Length: 288
Image (cartoon, rainbow, N blue to C red; front, side):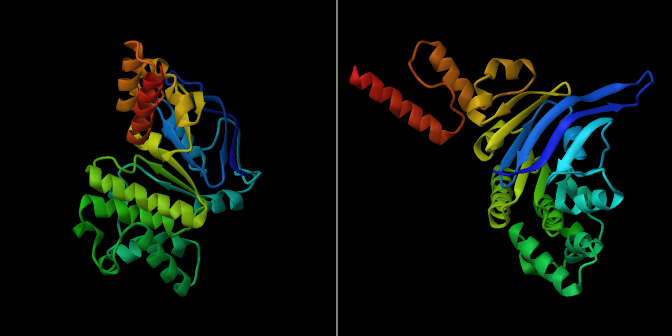
């Protein structure tokens, strides 16, 4: 896969040279690839929110670089402005940022700022609404009349309407019931596949990131101690728990079973993997 974002020696210090100085990121390096789903996990205060805000130029590095398709996003004001349309960021609880009188106008806000013509804006609004799971009849309603889950969809559609190459979502399922959360994640995956976009998913739900992400990034005290596939990262279960991260429940169960002496693969974090691991253990037992 081709790199789309490269983070090079990124350091960010809040309130430098004051008694409140805080090093939020410390010489971070990371390559993000086109078309992948990247999960970012870390406890509150770990630096993950600061990290994602650098990716579309909302926050400027104290030192280091953010490259988008090989170009430093801070090399010119014009490029920094363009990047904010190419790298879309959906904040946690984005429904609190809705402000237009209709859903249509809210979704159209980004494309209109891109100076697109009305025909293209209309195409993007309707396409984004469909990706976000919103019916056409919702577009004429006030966003403030909608349920919490529908408001979340409107906010996501507003970013999707800019057709970003990279879509960053900060806790997109926070506060939603399991069915609503699963539906929104499925919509996001549909967008990724249709546009060959990169999706960066920040989540406290270990089950969600384990199931959806191609790779995981662990953020702890401003550093990235682990980067790899979910299997690779969750193999460090004890270290993750010492950082205040709860590994997927399935992973904890199978690690405990192995500790009890059962010859079974402990790197399990989904129901499908659990089934395969149990069947494999039974085959091994039967073959003895």
